[in-house]
Amino acid sequence: MTTVEVCIADVESAVASQEGGANSVELCDNLKEGGTTPSWAMIQLAREKIDIGLHVIIRPRGGDFCYSEFEFELMKRNVKISRELGADGVVFGILRPDGELDKERMAELVELAGPMYLTCHRAFDMSPDPYVSLETLIELGFHRILTSSRQASAADDTALLGQLHQQAAGRIVIMAGGRVRLDNVERIVNEAGVGAVHLGTGVSDLYDSQMVYRNESVSMGADSDEYQIRHTSADKVRQTVTLLKALESA
Image (cartoon, rainbow, N blue to C red; front, side, top):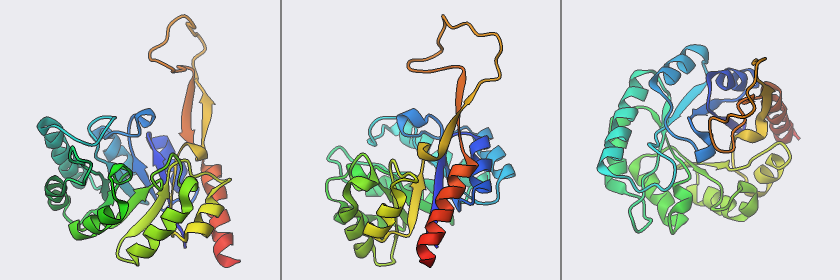
């Protein structure tokens, strides 16, 4: 069975992902920046509301993956609190200025994570040699790599995804992520042979705000619409899960 994970930024979406049949969620904040660490309260409430896998992104800010000492200290504390709050896994990656994985710092986080499931996020895609990085992550004890095949979308280079999946050879899971949607997930899985996919806004919908009074002259952020809220759609997750099940039984 293909593992399905949904990237989410709110508890409503966590519940919808579970209702749609996802195996796990990656809990984030600030999805427009690629995801940052959510609040401790959000981790706690999500854990109370869902039974499926809860994986927390450990990313102190948007932008690159080369972090200051203060940012690294935040990451360490967030790994510890995620474990204490009952998260099943953590998702992180750190790069050195030369683009290579920062093995020393990542090893510290691995130790702090204890028995939690470890995923390296798309920092992997920003490293210079994915084949070398894959072996480094296995050496560090990671369980999974989330990759968009070093492109905007995992669908853009299924050949590389397939090569990474073959190199992994069961030692680490290759999860296809990055603009994976209902209209391309079948091709990705067929062409790359991967057994795990990571869904995002492609399985979400915009919902109208409950506000009746609206001051259209004021905006609380750039490119934001205060009167539309995006949540994961249980139906879209279910459609994707159903498609993948049919693909496996064909």
